[in-house]
Amino acid sequence: MDQREQYQEQLQAFTRQHRAGHWSGSFAQFMEQVLPMAPCQFVRSSHQYIWDMLGWSGQQDEHGRLRCKLFADELYGIDAALARVADYFKAAAAGSEVGRRLLLLLGPPSGGKSTLVIRLKRGLEEYSHTDAGALFGIAGCPVHESPLHLVPHTMRPGFRETYGVDLAGELCPHCRMRLEHELSGDFLRMPVERIFISEAGRSGVGTYAPHDPNTADIADLVGSVDLSKVAEYGDEGDPRAWSWSGAVYAASRGMLEMIEILKAKREFL
Image (cartoon, rainbow, N blue to C red; front, side, top):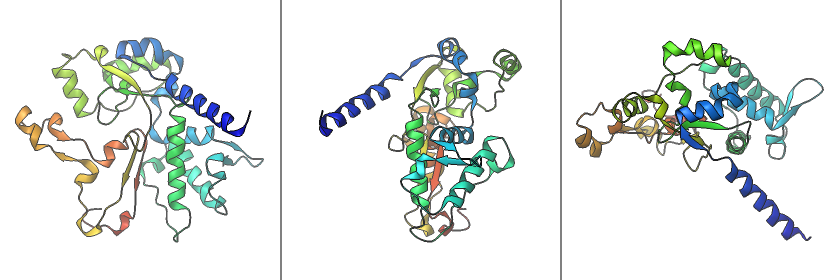
C-alpha cells in the first residue's frame, strides 16, 4: 500500500470517528441514557475540561510534571512557561481562586503566545470528539447551556445523593424564557444534543481582536439588542430580542481569546 492509499484510509477513519458521536434527544432521555455513564464528566467547569484535555494529550515525566504532546511539535525552548500555563489550569480545575482570573500571556513578538493559544483551541476541538471529552448542551441555546442546569435547585441535593456529584450554575435567560413560554415549565421535554467545540462554528471557542483599540465596542463581546426582534417580542428586555453574537457567548463552555486587549481604552477594559 503506497503512502497515498494509507493517507486516504486515515481520512476515512477520521470521518468515521467524528461522525459516530452525534446524539440528540429530550432531557429525560439524556438523564436516562447518557448521564449514568459518567456523571462526573458532565459537571466539569471549563477549567476542568481544559485540564482534562491537557492530560489526555500528554503524560507525566519522571518528576511528575505534565508533558503535553499538544505543544511538542510546535513550541520549543519555553518549557518553563508551558509548565506555568499547565499549573494555572490545574489550580483552576481544583476550584481555587485562580479560576476567577484571566490568563495573561506577555512576551516579545514570535515568542509563541499565539501558537500556544492555537494549540489549545485545536486540542479542545479534537478532545470534544472523544468519549472522554463528550459535551452536551441544550439544543438551540446561544451559549451551549449545560442541560444539567435544568435541574431545579430544590432537587439538586437529591441529584448529589443519587449521582455523587454537585451541580452548580444557573439556566441562561434565553433557555429560561423558552422553558416558560414553549414548554410550559416541563424541563424534561427540553431538547438536548451533543455539541462539539469548533472555533469556525463559534461553539466553545471565541476570539476577540479589536480592529481599532480606540473604537472598541463592548457589543462585540456581549452582543446588543436586536431591533428587528423587539417588534416581534415587544420588549427590549426579552432575552429572545437580544443578539447573542458576542465572542463571550461563542466561548461559553470553552475558552475566549482576547488579542492585544491591553491596548484598548481604560473605559472598555
